[in-house]
Amino acid sequence: MNNRAVINTALAPSAIGPYSQAIKVGNTVWISGQIPRDANTMEVVPGGIVEETRQVFANLIAIAEAAGGTLDNAVKINISLTDLNNFAAVNEVMADVFSEPYPARACVQVAALPKGVQVEIEAVLAL
Image (cartoon, rainbow, N blue to C red):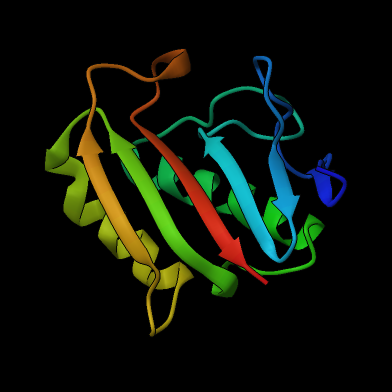
């Protein structure tokens, strides 16, 4: 694919495995799942689910901007939670980040996430 571009920014944590922060193909950007790591320290942010979710969205915002867009360009969000009891708290943070029309979304409970975090979110943007 000659129209495939790797998106990378120092304003979001570097990948902790063999993957890119995001890949842009045409006008679509596929952002890898982000966990609540601070780009400066590469450590998981302290606090609860609200702080973790805010950091995840900050990471997604930085990558979206590096790709030439914003999270307003999001057409699909996938959320993984280790506890669906945190669903309402994540919704509150998401409502602060997005405005209508909201992107399509899936939210699932998983057994575990990297680094023992409570939330991981990935996004697909249409620029």
